Image (tube, helix red, strand yellow):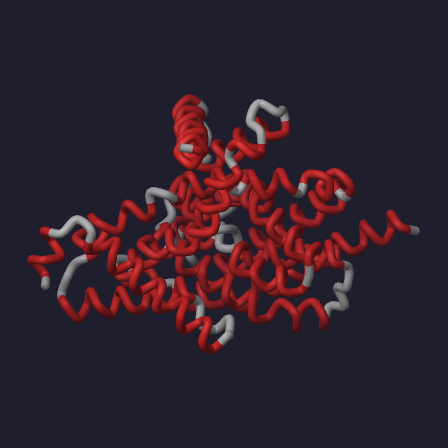
Amino acid sequence: MKFIKQLSVIILVCFAGEFIRYIVPLPVPGSIWGLVLMFILLVSGVIKLEKVETAADFLIDCMPIMFVPGGVGLMRSWATLKSMLPAAVCSVVLVTPFVMLVTGKVTQRIIEKGDE
Amino acid sequence: MKELFASASFAGAALTMVAFFFGSMIKDKFKSQFFNPILIAIVIIITFLFTTGIDYDTYNSGAKYISWFLTPATVSLAIPLYRQIEQLKNNVFAILTGIFSGVVASAVGILTLALIFGLSHPEYVTLLPKSVTSAIGMGVAEELGGVYAITVPVIIITGIFGNIIASSVLDFCKITNPVAKGLAIGTAAHGTGTTRAIELGEVEGAMSGLSIAVAGLMTVVVAQIFAMLH
């Protein structure tokens, strides 16, 4: 019963997220509105951590497998990917370390400055 | 096999589960980030579908129930974020500025590549959210008119690649602060990178987990702006 209650809260927030997406004319997915809403509800104390964390941890634990069907969808869009393969490969090989470098350096600078 | 698959509503879901756990077994056996269960599962399923001649829609009629849980799982990411609220408050400026710089760096990088390779607008927005967690990246690509079926594998490969190169890049760039290390990994390589950050330490892991949600949310906004530039 505890698990069902927790899952119900999460599903309700998902629907609230979809509702926000329906009324707000921004290209933001309902899942993101739901994430923001859930965070606000936790910070404001409307939802207690214990009321959702078991189901939430379970869902996060299962999250990797949820990406599989979408990834299999690649077989349908292979023709599209082929035309942009060099750019896609470069985006992974070059942009990934670049983002790491920028994020790490900027954060480290600010923290070191604060410590001085 | 084709008829069985078309008539059985659990076939796609069952195939997904079996392929994923086979992928997990391989990962445990070799203890290497090169063997990512998500990637192995995708390869197994595509090979299986091609061999048997089953089309994607037939597979997905059962598998879509697994994808359905992505929204509640994404909403659940608010929970680890809330658990790190103290750490978030203490370093709020450094964290937000650091992640924001990374998100912008990613968008600038993709824009540069789009100009170099002469990508069309749909191709460009397909790659634009490639650094963030699949749930958000997929949604952003879809909303901007990209092909999310390409965004997802690119995101997954970004995660695996980031996971593999993380320690070398951080050492090479002399990034030693644990908070900075965690944010760098999470912002560049989302969840798959975070598993590596957790191995580096508690602070690194927590900060990397935090960046998944924060970088994802910032990307929702930054990608909208960058989508207008090309």
